[in-house]
Length: 241
Image (cartoon, rainbow, N blue to C red; front, side):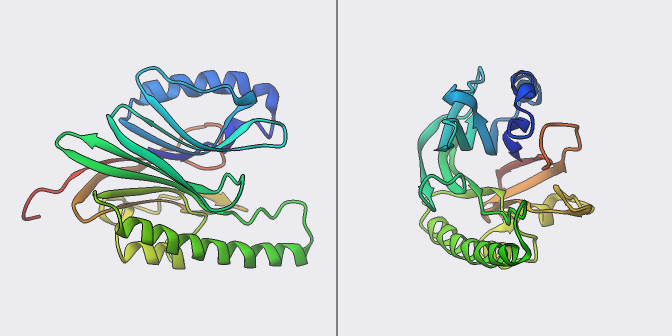
């Protein structure tokens, strides 16, 4: 599963966070996936959010109020190694990865969160500048991701919040080296975000040729985020497929 949690609503209404965290914890256990990739996840007062049965990996910034915010991978699978790539100092937009053992295979899971436009509370001129800067940043980040994937010794699963439509330059660039899991196993429109009332898909999953995907689903549940989670089954492609 990949999911931008929007900090479990903490920055909208911090009074609800404690209960949201409790419900989220149980929600993860009930879903029972082997691997979760979360973006924009918060740990208030730097208190680790551990979930029994899962190993917690993270790549985090420290907010001005001394909370942790960033990327997480929770996994039941054995971990060979893991690391991160920070695109800017103390930004929650970044990349983290983990090499996980699945059966007889090792697979590299990459979790990313690219820069958003963040239009709130700015003038038209500032908004135009934000669009320009975000487009430049995401284009550069996609090149770094492409280079990182090309150096991977293992098949890759790339997922996260790209803040880009499937027709965008970064997504097209990813499809040159990976398969779009929605194209191979999704159906319908499968939007993950509403931008001013317009349903769009900005959360993405890509896989290497050695892997196949199935049961791609955007989960429509009343959760804590303005994004919707994507669940998917991924395994080794059979010889000759």
